[in-house]
Length: 436
Image (cartoon, rainbow, N blue to C red; front, side, top):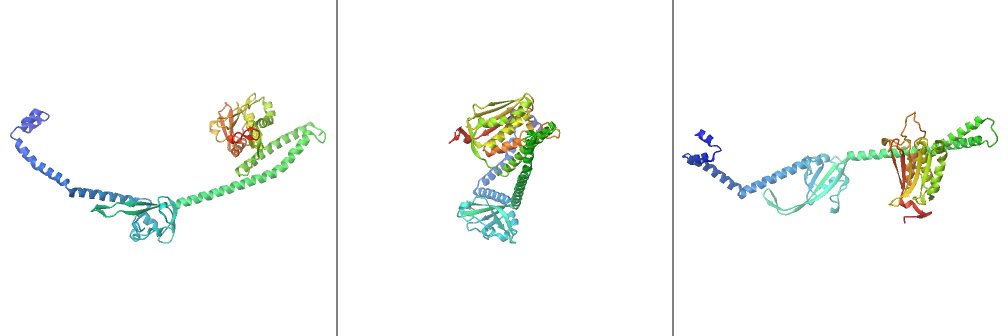
């Protein structure tokens, strides 16, 4: 018989022949009790009692899940009723308070905090306060109080005849954050004090150095010009010329250091007036003309699109342009070209650009060259002289004018430094702003 069933597997005709065999009756008799049991189970599962049981178990599961979430929370959580009496405290809150969970039930939650929320409008907003521990000490915490409305329920596992309000007090220990903030504040104050001390030292030393330096420059100029008569030997005149040139260079570097110190200390005051751009650019080009001529470097100015004047500090503008042109001459080889151009962009800003075809700046140095005393070539055998203050000083002076400085460069492809003055400083005619 079993072999017949095996042969019949997958064969509809064989199955029909077996079903019509004399053994079909006993098989059906065996199935009836199991079918009856299954129908009884289905009727029981659909009964009101079974539905109530399943709903109750689901409710118990949700309650257990919520309790696990509360108990495992890193934050302290206290649930209070409408009168502010404690109904539930999670372990994190009990640990911060230094009291047992049972000892807190029924006590007013407001007494636990040095400053609690007094109005409903403050609910839901985080605020810093202090938690009063059982031993009298206080812990800084960040507190949020949220309010919730529980609806009425007639379920036997959670019977609640009327809706009621609860308040959820969630707080977190911010002692480490507070200590970090205080340490950061102290470090900032120390840095400010150190910066102020440095600026004062530089200013005092600058004034102390400038007085004898002016004497060196003045007397060396008298000697090289032989104002009181012939010196006698031409070598002395050459020496006096070298002394005067070195003194002027040292004085310029000292003035730049003092200007940087004043800018960093917030003590640089702009003396604003109408500055004619053509005059300012012409004076700056004249300052570097001799050095450019020695190298055979041509300087071209294209200011047809520039505004007539700017409301700015004339000395600062002159300092910026001279620094940029000096760098351009210094880093441009013999027979190079330098162009100074000006225009007004669509936003009304004045844009001045100093471009050269010199050695350029590596990409990894573009952000650093604006830092004080930084040089792209900082080796002891560097080819170019200077202390690395020109660009940083120009950037600081531009910031005081509300403007910006941008550098575009690549090795052996030249450098373009772009100055952008805000439209509010652009004057249509001398003394009259383009922007009202």
